Length: 78
Image (cartoon, rainbow, N blue to C red; front, side, top):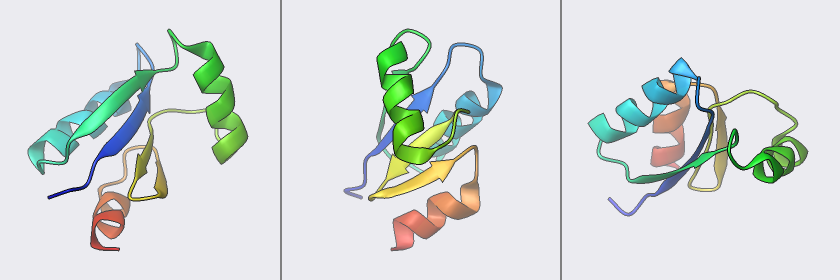
């Protein structure tokens, strides 16, 4: 599998943990970026997606907002 995701997380987000655990489970490699420790990245993320919450995941050029397994699989199948 050549997919790689970027998961934007915060330090206190339980859904972020669900997302990264799920990606581990289905063997999708990912990089995490913590917007709590990189606020400029968080601001850029809001500009890109219009969303303030996390997790936000970019996978195969698609944005997945929140923990959404159906959207993960749709991005993998695209």
